[in-house]
Amino acid sequence: MPGYLIASLLIGWAARHRFRAANSYLNATRSLPSGIVALSYVAANCGAFEVIALSAVAAQYGVVAFHFYLIGAIPAILFSALRFLPLYRALSIRSMPQLLEMRYGPQMRLLNACVVASSLLLLAGVSLFAVAQFLEVVAGWSFITGAATTATVVLAYILLGGLRATIYNEILQLTVVLLGLVPIGFLSVRYLLVNTRTNHHVLGHLWMGLPTASVRSPFDVLGLTVGLGFVLGFGYWCTDFVLMQRAFTARTELAAQQVPLWSGFAKLFFALLVVCPGLVAARLFTQLGTTARYEQAIPLLMQSAYGPVMLSIGCTALAASLLSGVAANVAAFASIWTEDIYRTRLRPGRREEHYLFVSRCAIAFAATLAVFDSSITFYFSSIMEQVQLIFTIFGTPLWAIFLIGIVSPRITTRGAFAGFFAGMSASILHLILSVSGFLRYGTMMSASFHSAIYAFLTTCLVAVCVSVSVQSDCESGDGSARWTKLQSDHRVYRSTWVLATILMVLLLGLNWLLR
Image (cartoon, helix red, strand yellow):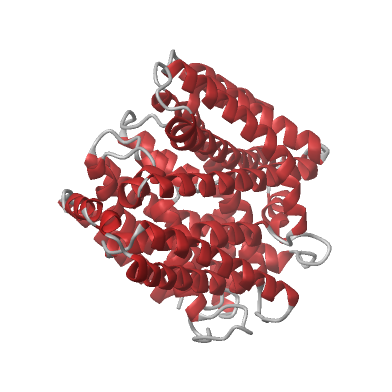
């Protein structure tokens, strides 16, 4: 672990150079080779939530955890590569708020930037909580010591090298994760294959026995396909600031389109690497869910299966995967604060040196605040519940107004604003009713999926109604016509279609195999 922390600082030192513009420091737009971008894209999504949270979901709910990949990720990845990333590149944008400004105007850019910045701070706190909890179990550090040490390391290498250092450090993290988790993943797959031959109920089924629509059941088809798959999955993979920030760094149009597809193949591999150990841990460690949290599934499995050397590597792998989540969200917050709030609304027209100083202050602020808001996670029973809640409240309304704005040029700025706040209010109200017991669900996870559906529908309905009732020429004329024209100025390469077809075939095959 100390070696990994030192390597992280060295990467930040090596990636530093005299930045002349804030964008090159914060976003590194169109400046990195496709291989580096693809690896970083995968690593950005394989941090704390991927390894710890989804193995916990597998230990708690079983094989249904595969749905977070087969339904919640791959379809959205295909749509992002074939539709959204070509559009983003054709518009030559540097961030998601900039895209919403192009469609709805500067007020929507400011709203989006504030909402995304708030969610990034919360997600950084969740990641920091996971690191601190892990260091408390493995190294015996106190929670505050682990959180403060992690935040200090993240702060140091981001300040030195900006997003470029963050991306290269994510690749180091991905390498360490593979070294530490591939052996336990292989052992888990072998265990499941051997036991499935004698007991067909060991693995379970993805679809068989799953009710179509039943809120009292732990999961249902409606919540998984519409709530997790379309609303949360598409909203995350098509609009998430951290992922889009990495895709924008690709030098060529072809590379930008294919980066999500290559990550899709990697996600299928990580599904085995993360879910299978969770399934095995649930069978071997009966204390999970009682005296031990489900997030301890993989650490317990490592302690049981690894020797001292491999246990050290495995622990470093988990710490690395958790650390990257903190760094990605801190760097993204600094970017969105400096470029989309401070530069555009508060202090436009200043020298680049001024914006570089502000961005570094934002990094320090985000890393410090993450230490304090990490304690919020203590009030949730699992990391994934809090993450789903954050995406439902903040991400779903933004995804709805973004999608409906692309589909219909008649949606106005007033309609988008009204729809956003109505959708956010609907998700918060649904949460209150669920927690109070007025609405009863089989699991809080299922409640989040259905809450996302209601928030999405409310946002779209209110946006359409308000746009139709108060539409004015100044809101729907030239801007919408320009947007419609820009949407047609892009193309998808043939090799991208080939990769997408292969990924789709694998997706359908795995769904049939695990049905």
